[in-house]
Length: 77
Image (cartoon, rainbow, N blue to C red):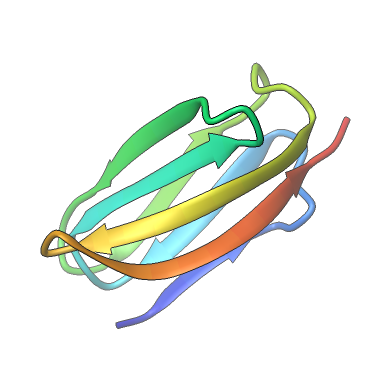
């Protein structure tokens, strides 16, 4: 499985390069969650984050109902 989440820190968009199907959950320090589906065997997903609050967000990638990757990304303005 290949995944790349960038840029980090980010200000306008988060780009996800992937080669799996699943979903990615972004959540802030208050537990608010944004869920995005990742479909197809490979590709790139661009997430517009301009309306997200600045700060630290954690993300979890779920494939076949299993958590595969956990990490964080910083949103700056």
